[in-house]
Length: 380
Ligand SMILES: NC(=O)CC[C@H](N)C(=O)O
Image (cartoon, rainbow, N blue to C red; front, side, top):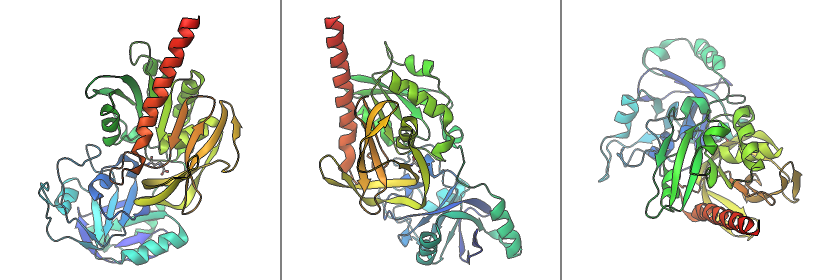
């Protein structure tokens, strides 16, 4: 039984582990990439409804995980594949869900559920199977209503690495970057390493001293990752970012990292009605007018003016990218300090590769910064 906080219920069959689970019900429109989605730490405390009807076709493999475990709190599918068929599959999706204790539900009308969430907005949900489903509906609803909401949730500490680690640069090492792990996906340091960046991944609790201790004379750049929870709660990270911006160290942020850049600059963030989750969202780069097809997973967004340059504590800033479906801010760019960020996922795990240039932009920013520093040194 699936029970939404507004009382609507759906009956289906147990899928994955048996028991009960709670979270925020969100829908994802990606037709591929369920393994990356499930293991993306940004989905911590969320129950994912897949709008694609047939899920599990390619099983579960050893290569596509975005972290060491499944973070989604629950999984809802219409029609699970009865057997997996892919040369990389090591086991079936349902076996993996069961092994990791993830409670799911299948054979429900996911289209009706998605339309409900789209009309009423994301909301809390519970999935109950086996003995847990035997209780009266009113009791199940009470349990859903007792679960925490996503607004005001500080979750980075629950998903971040406890120890710092290094992802070595591939080929010649060109730059050293400190990456704050707020729920980082493995593909992100990977794409940096491929470009000659040595990535020092730091726990979310890292201090400015920890960041400055990266590299011989401090890092060439600082990166803030994606991650779960409400950006309004990330006081520590925002203070840290303000120090980085004040020191004019090149900065790049993705998703949660974009929301934190927004807040560090003095913009607000707010919760979207039902968010953007999928791998075919059109985004326009406002400098070039070019449209990218992009991967999204966000429930919050930055509140910044689209058509004017804003004066912030760190100089001028503007909205660099916008979602063409609903005009939501999808990227920020500072004009007086070397910092930019995007709300969507250039690491494309899963998703299209249109936005990969954003990693090259980080290289350009660090190159310019290094050169300007060297010239300043010569002048002095
Ligand atoms: N993928 C992310 O980084 C998500 C950021 C934030 N938790 C949101 O839901 O908007």
